Each structure stands twice: as C-alpha cells, then as structure tokens.
Image (cartoon, rainbow, N blue to C red; front, side, top):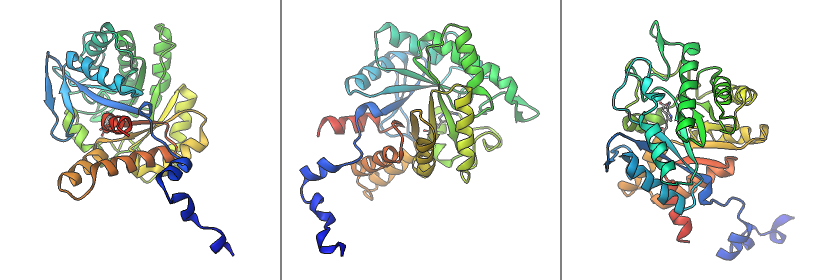
Length: 325
Ligand code: PBG
C-alpha cells in the first residue's frame, strides 16, 4: 500500500527541499546567444520579429560580446547581413565579409567568449536558398566547395567553432577536410545535424532577409515527421567529423533531443529558434503568458531532454535571471 507511507509532497514542501532534489539546473554557460551583424559603425537597429534583438555593426557587436562574457554565457553565434547578395553567395566567404570583419574586430579587442559562426549561404544568395542553383534546384556537390571556403575564411578571421546549417549531404566532411588542410584542425564543428524544415524559422528569415525567393527548403531540410531519419543524419555527421550534434528547432523536437543524447556520446546542442522565442514574446505582450516563467520552463525542458548546449534568443535574459537569484 504505497499511500500513506509514500507522500510525494514531502520533498516539495519548502523551496530549500525543492532546490535540493531538482534534477535539471540551468547555468549561463549552457547558452549561446545568436547575433546579427551588419556593415557600418555604431549601428544598433531593432529587429521587429525578434523583440530585444538588433542588427548591429562590428563595434556594437564587440560590446555585446563583452556583455555576454560578463554574464558567463557559453558563446555567441554570428549571422551576417551582407552589403549585397549574388547567385553564389560570395559574401559568405569574402575575406572582408560582414561576419569576418566582426570576428577580426572582436578578436583584436580581446574578446574571450567563444565565437561561433553559422556556415550557410542563404543570407548571402540573391535567391535565398542555402546553396547554389542548377536547374532551379540546389546543387549539393557544387555547394560543398563554397561552404568549405566559407568555414575556412571564418576560421581565418578568428572563429572558434563553425556551425554548418545548410543541410547539404557531405558538408561536415568537406568542411573538416578544408579546415584541416588550412591549419585549422583545432577548430571544432557543431553540426546542425537534425535540422527540420520548420515554420518556426519565420522570424529569423525576416531578421536575416533569407527567405527563399521561390519554393521552400524541404528538398534539403528534414521532414518534421521523421525521428529515425534524424538519428541517421546525426550518425553520418559524426562519421564525417562533427564534434557537437545539434537538433533544431528545440521544443517541437524534444523526443529527438532525448534520442540523440541517449544514442551518441558527444555533446548535444539544441536551437530554441526564433519562432519559439517569438511565440513567448507575443503572448507575453498580450498579457496571456508570464514571459520569465515561460522562458524558464522552455529552457529547462530543452536541457532536461538532453541538450547540454542551448542556442537561444533568451540567452542574456536567462543569464541575468540566474545572476539575480
Ligand atoms: C540558415 C539558418 C536558419 C536558422 C539558422 N540558420 C534559417 C533557415 O534555415 O531558414 C534559423 C534560426 C532561427 O529560426 O532562429 N540556414
């Protein structure tokens, strides 16, 4: 007879006991802050679809890195808004590209927080697809070389880790090989391994100006219905040399995060994407949801599911909340 011998409420009675038995604890170093860098100086332009986030020039980015570092975040990940776009996304690998300049400036300023770069072409192509086109389709193998060039140029500018998000087959291997051939064998790859074709990227595409001008990304990003296929994607990326495996988005794919953590003995990252952030922000703005509570519960769920690295637009807010406790 379990009751009344067993009473689950005993350990919930006071905050100190609840603290004692809490299984999942968030710390600032769990979080990676996404930032959008743009050309110019002293620019800090609010992004309407991501309240609290700005397009920022390299000098402002350096300040943002300092803030993130002071709060103890695990890293920042850079996305670029180039001056101009073209068919092949050449701005992605330009020596003086917008991300490269920001990296150089931050490293020169002595920023210590890990700087991670998103490796993808969609912010740099005129058509908004994540690779180069052939017959109105993304040409996988021709894209690999451009992605590899991009990763090398980012490492040369100071990236501490590269994170390919394009979902081409073979990109992790191609990037690993190119990094190694150029003396960057110490630069890790965080692969967006299980990246689903999700509507939750909507606010990001507004922010990055990267929505595809025709079609969609279903020909390269995964079908949200497929969890077993996600394991296969992750297995292949590991074989090709990925150091960290990412699941993206986070909350709609907690089962995939759990499976990944149970299946692969490498750090698992999860991207709490723009739409997940925007939903909380919008509901809070209407007074329908407590923002801090929703943030906390979301991030805790992602960590509880098995992610030890969480990319989130809440990174600074969550770290501040931890510092204020
Ligand atoms: C680039 C990229 C995207 C995101 C991260 N890297 C957009 C996309 O694939 O369309 C989305 C991030 C977010 O929604 O917060 N490929």
